[in-house]
Every structure is written in C-alpha cells, then in structure tokens.
Image (tube, rainbow, N blue to C red):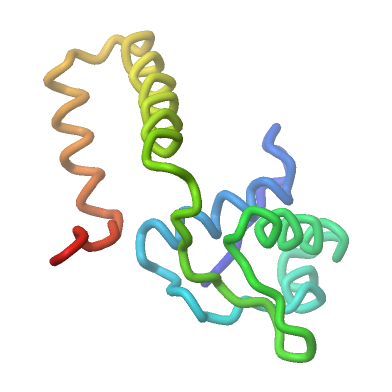
Length: 132
C-alpha cells in the first residue's frame, strides 16, 4: 500500500493515514493479516515525524483495525463485529445522514445521488452474507 500525506490539508497527517488504511481495507486493497510498513520506514518515506505514524498506528490498534506483534510488525486485523446490530445500524444511518445532507447542500437530485451511490458501491468489498 502506498501512503500519501498532504501537509497543506486541514486534516492532521495521522488522521489522513488512519483514513487511508480504513479506506484501503474497505476497498479490498489490503487484507487482514497483511503487514504494514514499520513506523520508522513509513516516517522516512513520507518525511514526517515517526511520532505521527506511531499515533496513527496506535489509534488504529485501539479501535481494532491493526494488531501489533512484538518483533514482527504491524498487521491488518480481522474485522470484528463486536457492536450490536442495533448500534451498527444507528452508526450507519448517522453516516448516511451526513452524506445525504452534504449532497442536498451541493444541489444533487435524488436520482444523481442514487446513480453516484450505485457507481461507488461497486468499488468496495463488503462481507459475504451470513449463511452464503
């Protein structure tokens, strides 16, 4: 995986990295068990402070996206559905509300949003249906 950071963005670099890892997982570009670059290696590549990388990795590990294996490195964790289905649905609906609010304010029609949604959804890797 190739990471990028934009030092002129309003989003902190550690947050940019976190978002890139989560998006790459959602799109299937990185898989559970895959090893990420070490903190020092990635800091050198991006020319940022190693503490920035460490913060991103630490936050991702805290939320269950990464696993650190001492002496081996940092790896993508297997997704865990430890939230109840009710809470998961509430979080999904809240995220959709934000997205749809932005679409309305940008002047998109319902048809345009539906077409964009249909196009984008194909780029993501969703879990298989239970029992399938």
